[in-house]
Length: 173
Image (cartoon, rainbow, N blue to C red):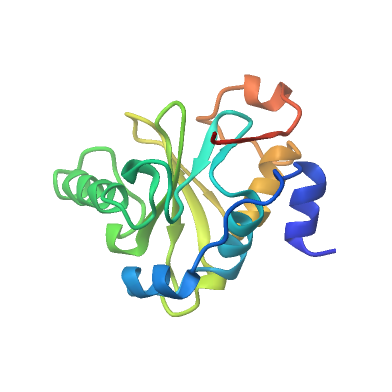
């Protein structure tokens, strides 16, 4: 069973999300994106997991959750400022981080893009909203979502109530 199959069994996707022209998206970003991320977006489209976690994606409902929109750059600049001012220590070089999602509480999810030329090996980092804590998951985005939704991993800055929910995906209307 593939990781995407495990994710869709655990948390069924909506029917027929709109297709994405990945070649143009990656061209606009100037980088190749992880295959598992593209498969998640192709399967689920725009929306949120458990009404809490939203992935940035191409052609999102607003520019603030569009992976090619301003938000990933704005977040990286803030991390660079925090690191330069030694405020809320960032455990990674901000240049290695690409914001890929946000929670309703304001935590950001990142790819740790090391090695940069191997996107399918990128791992996941989460930073605390308005705080110094970081959580790192040594696996792909799909593996992180499976572990989170199956309650096999507990992200310390996520609310405990998330652990009590049955997994669901809420598509944007």
